[in-house]
Image (cartoon, rainbow, N blue to C red; front, side):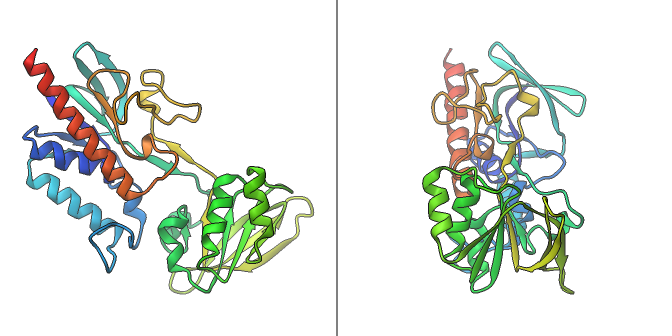
Length: 308
């Protein structure tokens, strides 16, 4: 019987691990197959408080991991496959083994959707990203492009006009799906040029492995051309990593976990933190904050069980 199991090892999961470990709960962190979450693919983080010169995403994750381990957190690469509430305890299946815990913190994150093109994984963090807030400032006075047509793509394109010399908005249809007010702002901005009925078919890196251009194809005429850009911002949505909890924890229509109060799920002893429940901010610092809250609530919940 574990006191606390934490699912996920991104900013939310590791912050929860630090707080739970400092409360002497000896949490078990299930890291999954790709430890570190989305920060592990970010080359430089400049907006996390306390690092005025920035810090590499993987290094920030390693620091948090070491900090949690120092206070007594334990780690396993096991991946959660199933979840069952069981009265005052919770059972989860990880790598074909059932584990039981009194408190569970779900911080399994969300995965950005990309285009599935060749060399995609190698280019993430090298001119390919899904977060303008995180990476936009690195691309001052150079042309960039945004892929997508919804509100998220419109917001990314508008944000990038603060830095980029030109923002191409590439959409596979002939009009935006974004709300009218967002679409109007985008189409009226002098720095933004929409490219309609078009998809990216190839990323073209330079000799250093950084993005230098993309190959475009018009979906109607099939005409192809090259477009010089220093970065591609993909804004076609995220998929929350909630498959193991489907049907057992409450979610919204897109699969994001729902909390009845900040970080508490509908099941006693089950708490949620980070991008698995956050469809709005998706920042390292907001994930860390919710991980802190989840660990504190888990500790309070365990104390209430002891009183009973």
